[in-house]
Image (cartoon, rainbow, N blue to C red):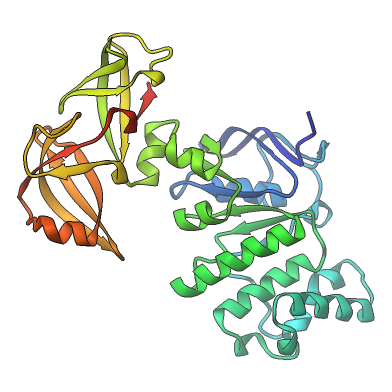
Length: 361
C-alpha cells in the first residue's frame, strides 16, 4: 500500500474548553482534489489553517510524505493558501504580486520576473502584468491569487472558500478553470467550501465535517447516493428522511415501521439489521413520485403541499405528512404544470422499495 501524500492522525484543536477539531483522521492521496464541507463552525477552516501552519495543533500529527510537520514554520511547509479575501497587495502590480512569494524565498529578480510571467500567461493574464490590482475584475484577481501560489511550484495548494466573493456566473467559470488547472498540474488541492455545487463538480473526494469530526469521506457519487449518517443526508439536502423501526423481512423485502406508515425496502440492505432496531430511511427527491390518490404504488404516504421552489427547469415540491415529516419531490416544470397543485392540496407521495437508502443507528 502506497504512502499517503498527507495524513492527519488524531488531529485536535481546542481553544480553552471549546473543541474546534476532535480526533480527526484523514489520508489524502497525491494529485487529488479534496473538498472539505460542513456547517459554519464545524472546524473545516481550522483544519486547513493547521495544515498551513497558521494554527498550532493541540494534539495529533500532520504528516507530509511521511514526515511530521507540526513544528515546521509556514514558509517551510510549501503549502500556500488561497484566501476568500485573496489578500492581494493593492500597492503592487499584478506581476509584483505574483513575484512576492519568490522574493521571500530569495529568488533573483530576473528569475522572479520570468517565472511570474510564465504563470500569468498560463492563467490568461500575461497582458495584465503591469496593471494595478484595482484595474482587474473579480475573476482576474482570483487568478492572480492562484498564480502567486502556483509560481512557487508547491505540491499542495490550500484553498479557503476562494470563490465565495464572486458573482454566480464567475464562480461557475472559475470552477471549470480550477478543475482543469488541478488536473493539468497534478497538484494536490485541499479546498474548503460551503457550496455543494463546487464540491461535487470539482472534487475527487468530498469530506463532510460536523462538530470537529468527519461524518463521511468518499467520492461525490458515494456521498450523494449513500450518505453514511442522517446528518450527511440532511446537510446535503434534497432527500426525505423517515425515522423507522425494523419490523421483519418478507418476500425478499425489508419491512420498516414509521409514524408515516409501513414501508418496504430492498432486502439487500438488511445485513446486520435486527427486528426492533431503529434506522433512518432516506429517499432522494428525484426518486419520489406524486399521484392525486393512493393505490398506485408501494411505499405511499398521504401529504399536503406546503410550498414549491423553482430551480431552472426543475421544481422542488415541498410536502408534509400527517405525522409532520417533511418530504421533497423534484419534478420537471412541465410535469408540475400538468398537476396544477396549490398550497394545501392533498397528494400521495410514493417510491420503489429499491430507491430507499437505510442508515443504521
